[in-house]
Length: 320
Ligand code: A3P
Image (cartoon, rainbow, N blue to C red; front, side, top):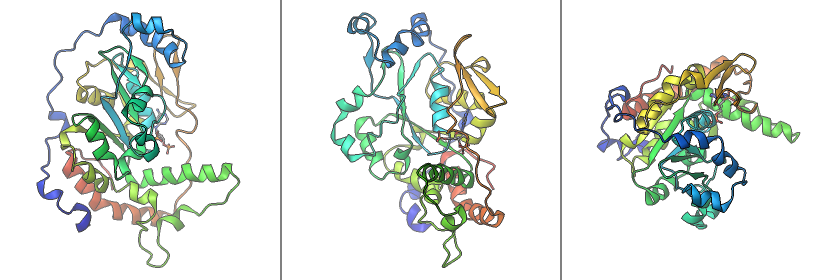
């Protein structure tokens, strides 16, 4: 533990609890045309159907993101991006761009990255999500070089659940290719020592504090906002309102935009009276049963790291 925290913790100060952050300034008026065009022209642009003339006429631009969902994989990154996109002042980059974590993409330069962004009105903010950013060594410095004041969103879930979700995704990929795969227990526990296997990526990714500390060498803690991924599943609106506040956006996402779909077992999105959607079936997989002793071992393992994570971020969870 000592080496992971080495140096960085010395200069870390716990920040004030998230609720006590200043409220955003009085809501600015979002131009009506934004609301009209969000599902019209911008939607057509996304599909590649708008003309150059329309782009020029409406002053549409491809902007670098002003906020990035940097992770955590299986934390609910897709749900968060799609839900934020309900806001009239937010435009999402639909695909994971993997600009900062993929050396080949990064070598293509910032204009390549910008060209991957959707068209938007100048006052809108573009958000992209690539969960691999959170755990990739080189990324914090690269993002810092692009924009040192960018806002960074991290969505987390209870670490053991997240690790099992991560495993389930890989397992499904193997099964699709008719390949066999180890049981979760075999991967998560080192059979020689009977201790938690910290070499297993799904375990390492869930040690949130370890990754966050690398980011804190570049960005102050105030530039991060931690989203509770478990609460985003159970009751998304309050989490989204905290994000609106963090992004200095007027509160525009409402209960109307979110409805619980009993068949799906999740909240789905309602844009307007005719357009609504649920996330794809690959979100919300059924997890395999895991030996309760292994679950307890993992929870005990994560516990001290979680405490450190709460201390640094000022956000506490009821994780075991
Ligand atoms: P599970 O498949 O383990 O249930 P990511 O988008 O980062 O890959 O995260 C996937 C997780 O998002 C899913 O994990 C699911 O639980 C969660 N999620 C949160 N809100 C959701 C929603 N409204 N619809 C579907 N999945 C949602």
